[in-house]
Length: 328
Image (cartoon, rainbow, N blue to C red; front, side):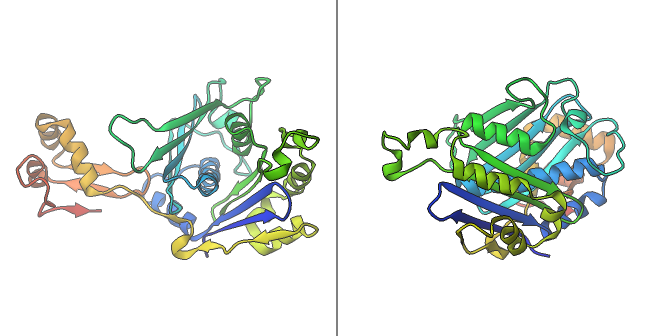
């Protein structure tokens, strides 16, 4: 099982593409949820698709910071989030309240899980690593419906709509996930460069939806079935879809340079959070529960603070790891 990201361009055409497959890391994400309360199958599918999409977006813009993809609304899935770092490390989680409707095939549209009453939103946040004090991350938000106020049922449709609105670029996105693999294929039209961008007869080809080369390749990409994206290897997928195209592929990113699951939580961050509550609040929790148990929604780890740990949070030695610290 490997995690891999493949980038490619179509020679002589204003079109680029990427394909990501998450296997080992996706198994790790799901394994960590088993110790708690596993998500229903449709939620797992949504989180897998969001993870693949977040990595594709991060690799597409090469942003020096976190790309955070969020879906939130008024259904049983109140919020779902996937975060991808510049080194393609990612994590994902969701908040589910109530019962997710049963389904025979494990699939549910966003209109059932998130956007029940039409109040669902998709937010994409760019949070720079070198963010200065007072600087707010960039965030773009779009509703979970199209320009005609018709609900968008798939995450891929939402993100295509977002890219069209925010970047004014045609994008075709194919996403799929099950309990073994999370994968995504992105095809995007590039702005024309050089002489093709000068005023003249070619100018109209750079307008949204009018580039015949992009339209042809996007149509080919749309023929990719969910089962094919989940089960076929990358070479087979690209060969089947684009065998007539002049495709230039770059070295795949895998292993240390490829996608992987990684959480940014730490005992130090949890300690800082507890200090922000104040001595009185922390002592109240200790008195009521005997210890403080803080679980990470992303990775499932639990940080335990006993009375000694809690008291040391507010001593002069608080910057040093507590002697009785434990990680479960």
